[in-house]
Length: 313
Image 1 (cartoon, rainbow, N blue to C red):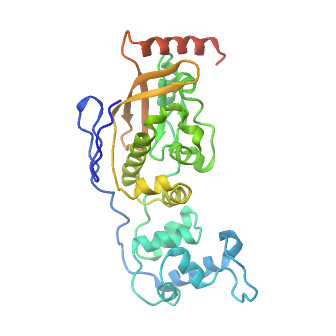
Image 2: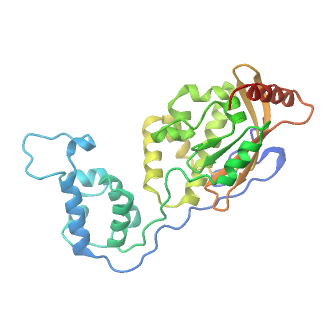
Image 3: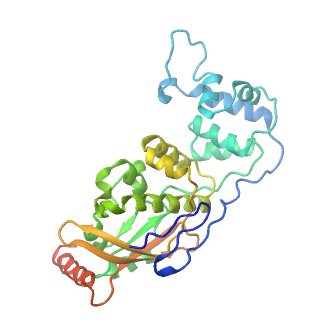
C-alpha cells in the first residue's frame, strides 16, 4: 500500500504516483449584507437564552436562580466570549459580532437551522449554506449500484456517512448504512468504536486515521459553514485525543484513486483499487472497488459474488 507523505495545507499523493487534487482554502462564509438589527437581535438572543433550561446543557442549577433559563454569563462561557461582549449584544450596544461569534452563539443556544439563519440575518449576514447531514442519493445512482453485481460499490457523503451500498459492498465491508446520530459518520465510528477498524490491517490504522481526517477537512472546506458539521468535529475532539491531534495538524487531502487492503472475516486480506467518482457539488462520492484481472484479489471477489448471488436479495 502506497503510504505517501503528508504536507500541511497540501494534498496527499494518489496511488500510482499521480498528484492529488489540491484544496487550498475553505469556502467563503456568509457575506455581510447590511446593518445589524440591534433591537431584534437583542430580543431574539434574550428570548432564546431564557427558553433554555440549564440541565439541558449540563449546567448546575444552583440554589438561588432568579433568571429564567440561562444566565448571560453561562451563555458567554458556552460561546467562548467575555460576559461583557455578550451582554452588549443583548443591550443593543457594541460592534457587529463576527461570523464565527454568530456561529458559536447559534450552537450555544441550540438553534435549529431556521433559527440559526434568522440569527445570521439579524446580525447583518447572509444565512450560511444549509445542507442536511446526509445528502439524498439520486435514483440513477441507486440503479447503478444495483447493476454492479460483481463489484463492491457504495456512496459516501462529505461527512463520511454511507447512505447506500450495493450487496457486494455489504458483503465486503459489512452494512455501513444502519446507524443513527453521529454514528452515521464512518469517521465517528473509526475514532470512537474499535470494531470499526477491523476492516483494515492493524499496521495501517495510523495511516487511515490521517487520510480520513485530511479528507474530512477538505470536505468541510467545500461544505462551508454548517453547525451540524461543527458539532460533529467538536464531539470528535472531545471523544478522541487521536482525532484532536490530527485535526490540529490542518492536513488536507482529496483522493480519486487509492489502494485498499481489506480484511474480510472469511476470505482474508483482499488487495483492491478504490476509484472515486464525485458528484458535481462533491458532496457525494461513489466508491467502486475493483481488482486487477487474474489476480488473487479478483478470484476473492469472484467467490464473494457467488456467495452474494446465493443469498436472497
